[in-house]
Length: 356
Image 1 (cartoon, rainbow, N blue to C red):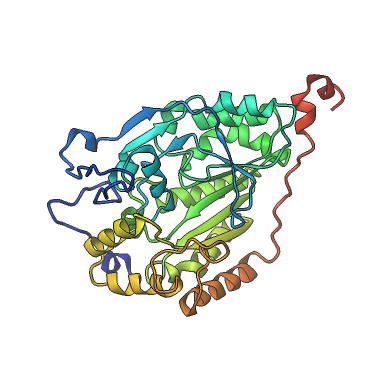
Image 2: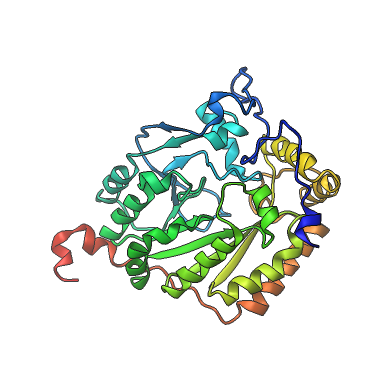
């Protein structure tokens, strides 16, 4: 179906252009109601410095393939309407809605904190995920370069890392990523939700365009940097018909693997997403929401390990079948290189490095 008939843009005067969320649900930890007025001076993106004592987070979820994650930013200006990370903004005293997109917490000390952790005698190298929560290459990274400084620390100690982003800014750091890839120290994941640019603009208003993202995948692959593509999230009735076309496209650009997650609208994200889809796709809203519920036992959300990212039931099974077919058809002969964990100790200890 052609995008211009698929995406029904909201033309009401109170629609906040350039943002995903159109509301600011009350923070469940506070009684205060947040202002959603686009004319309010606070509607502009604000960058708020925070000073955490640690930067690495142990990943306890069995659904995630890495042991550690770190997030130089909390909140994300990309504004993806479905983002599960929105709920974490409540813990900082903000709303999961508009606040998540326009109040960005910045951790300038992240590179220093990381190096302090890597230098500890009891630290054992495990791949660290950048980022497990919000995008480490969101727009302000162009100016602050916190992610770039983190990569410099990881390369200095020859420590493995996985990057996940939907921003072409990752290409800025090819000078670091290429030697890391040559030493099997890095993998990248590019998130791709759709090949339909008008739909992308509605779902993810401040992310890289579809064409820019596809070019990013191709450029990373051409530079020998392993690329996985996250077809995520798959939203039944919205982009679920694109699994095979997306897989074929990224395979042709050099991606070595694909993965997917099924949308889950936990916490305030359910209210934010439902408001968004009723304003943007009123004719499809009930169908999409009902199909999401079919995947999660009649709910928009699911927090159970093992099922929360894949769903269950007929709709979820159809998505899983399409994904298995796509992987078999386009990725059967592709192999991802394993991380090399052996280099770290020699580069942490200067004396051992002399023998490397």
